Length: 116
Image 1 (cartoon, helix red, strand yellow):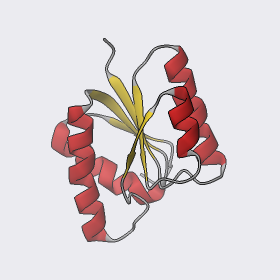
Image 2 (tube, one colour):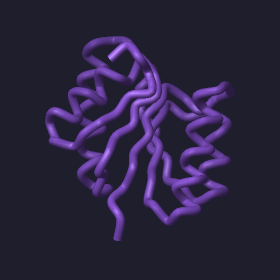
Image 3 (cartoon, one colour):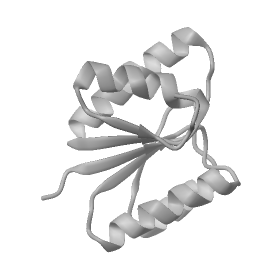
Image 4 (cartoon, one colour):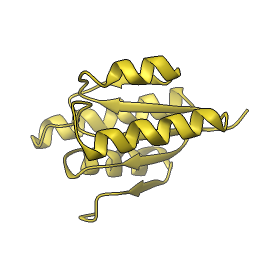
């Protein structure tokens, strides 16, 4: 079985990043590549459910340093429990949490956010 791709973004409300996340998740599903999404939730979570992609709700939108550190620990656990091979962070707010989770687990990450 293929390893899992994890996308992380602040929320699944409405916008370009959110739409792109759904489109990538759907494309991965069509190719039978396991994938999961982590966000603070929102109305677009329903679209993930319809295409069979698991969503994990975490307050990754937070810019509070303590919350980001807690999120990194939870992201690391999610990644290890779901056999994640690559983390894809799609926004500035969760980027530090993903970077720290990557260091903790040794799982590489890529960023669509150009600030990292």
